[in-house]
Image 1 (tube, helix red, strand yellow):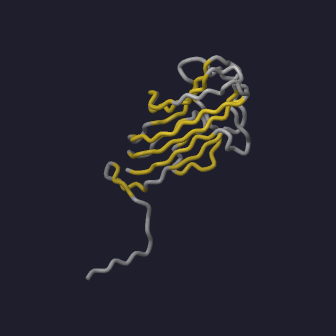
Image 2: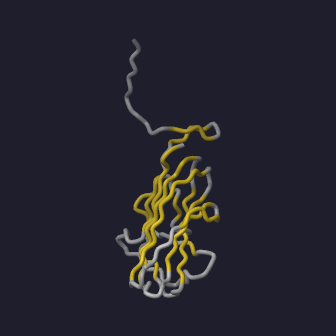
Image 3: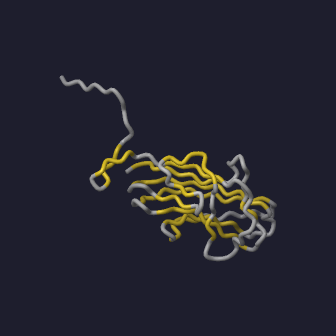
Length: 165
């Protein structure tokens, strides 16, 4: 009978062009303040930039442009919650997930005449190394809707992580 002795357990690794890479990629980005200077009623949909991170393991999320770039090939999970104020006249609110500039996922929400609305989108994608994912937003019928944020984060969020290779 054979025995295996282990001193430590390391995260799963993946061969990537002959180099062993630890599979660690996760982020949580938030909006630090209200973003009211963009008209979200126009097409193409506007990129939502989340300008601060609570964590950014692997440095895949860029707070300057709102893009997450996959460090390695794998299956990735993404979720975004957009808090919107001043949505009284909006017919609908539609968040999107784009990969490499191409729409891959969309949901539509009806604020039903209330002052506050939200957009929620969740999806899982198979990405190649250097593919990028971004949240975009389009709003029908109201140019005054504010993409809300706050310094403590958590009102508007974009989060993602690798779930497998």
